[in-house]
Length: 432
Image (cartoon, rainbow, N blue to C red):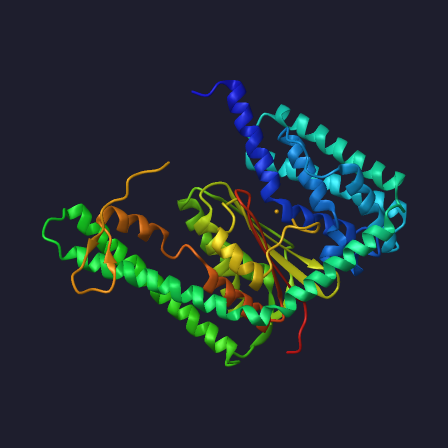
């Protein structure tokens, strides 16, 4: 049985993790509050990157302090740079302080939401977190006030360099398509190899009923994987060939998202995950219902599948007068090294200033006579089958192509052991 101190520490860590996985929702709610403030009329003209600026780094510093870790960034310098950015966007100092006050209130609202989600939480647990929020935000305001107009030349040069780098990366995009299909071919060969191996082992005379059931389950699962990959490749080919057309209609995005989240709730409950969704009560947009639904289902199922414990958060909101955004964020392991390497060239998952996020002896190998591949023993087959299909390159590339068709922007942020954020930004209205 946990001691009170250990139990309190566990609850404290869960609360810090909750704030981390709610990062995108916090930033969206902060912007919405600022846009509704008559004194902050210039906010709606800022893009997401311009509005968030360095605040995700400041929230990183807050999280690291809550975990008693040494912050990776200097809060004073970061606050100064944020003040400079606001000055460059013609915001007065009073407006900058006002928006930071709104962020403080948004963070406190998230603490209240956590208490409502976990009413058994000892409210005393919130006191050190509240104090740290106040301290970090006060230091941020102090830095903006004290050095509001410093480092403008360096900051401007850095931002130009960042934009130039992004432009070069976008120009390289068309030269990287072949890598996706080479990776897909490798995944297909892997699944087919597992299917052949399981079928061969099922013919063996000396296998138990339990082993037979395992091999049959491996066969069924990998046949499903192959079918899914082939279907995705076929749909991706149609998109690449321009055979897909848009059927734009005006619909309530909130209602569609809530329906998709409702269908996914059973999966979340089965896996012991907390699935949350928050956004405006109504959000009318012009889009293709089927394609938007395909995108959201794919990303949400991906997050639920690869998150072993914790939270999956779905949040959406209107941005300014012409766009809206939806984010799907999880507390999973992050994208694997292989997929990150591929998507670094394809989808550009980055963590930047504007981002929200023993040895053993091998089993012998059985060789099938006159075969062109090796048949692993049962234990090795089960291990390989558990990894089969873990890469989602085809599905994510399909999502990217669907977003392109909708003239939407897909952004991916992923960090190992902290989770992944998929963010989609698209226009509110289109020609019907």
